Length: 194
View: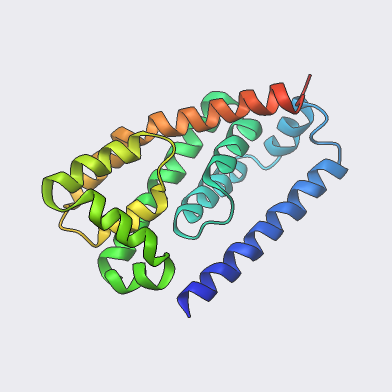
């Protein structure tokens, strides 16, 4: 039941993002960085606040691939502000995922994530200090399934303090690589704002 709700919410969120992107495209907001920046700035503090909230929710309930959210932050707010808004939102969402898993336990993992993924990371990461070391490494690199790992961590013995330190210290590298790397791809391959 939870898996179906999660899938439906993800599909609905993806459709809403596609409609929003189409609306931006039709309005000519993707024709220049200045047009997009001007449009977003008219919302004042609400623009960044909504984006940060979107990124936080995105960790708990994936709507888009995480890298696309990071790219959106940099496109909408620029490299530095986009990085910080991504960082704040993703860290907040990571803490929320941990808290939810801490309350719901393993049944949540089993109802939301594929059994093969659970078995793979259970076997590979182990428990205790071994788990914490692997968790920190995987959060640091930009290719691991971070959302799942945050939920998984909530079902282990890792403490709040250590978990929070790992998230706050290891997330910046992967967020920076996603944010700036995908921005370069968008600019070079898609000819964005040339």
